[in-house]
Amino acid sequence: MSNKSMNVIAEALMRQLGERPFEEISISQICENAAVARKTFYNNFGSKEAVVEHVAQKLLQVYQEMIAEEKADSLKDMAYLYFRFGERFSKVLSVFIENNLFYLFVKQFDEMLPAINTLLFGDKINEMGDENLKYVFAFNSAGVNRLLDIWIETGMGKTPREMGDIYNSITK
Image (tube, rainbow, N blue to C red; front, side):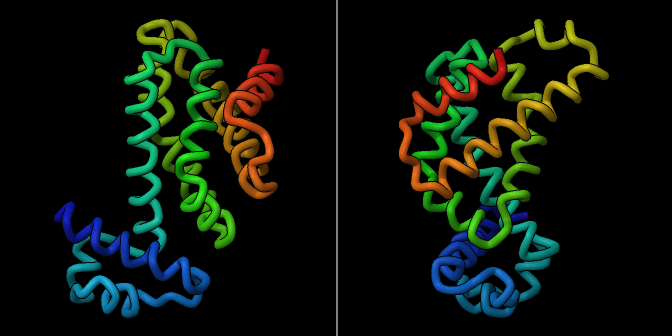
């Protein structure tokens, strides 16, 4: 897979999502907008949804970088940074929400969550055991992502710090 081709295709889809709903965008239109052949699309992605997952994965890499740069070491820090991340990428996340694609973002978040928790907690995370971890990850993912979804849908009237505090008060 070519990162350049993947990014060009992703950018084309995101531009089109600013103009019309996801369901109305065809792979042919994405290819035309990206100036790539259908073969190039299918060499990189199996579907339009896979393009959205690629975009989500790129966004979440930024979140991981934020955690590392800020030296976050607690759920409180993680939550605050997540809402700062949400604020930074609110336009893209709004497009996902409006097009019923937020679940693809959450899927990528879930796949990245073990790495994020390792960044936060290091080896301590392994003390919980694999069986318990899957429940902890599911609870945290569902909670923080539903809060992010509602916060964006309602116009982000609270600050990222206030949202982090809300998440932390729920998970104490």
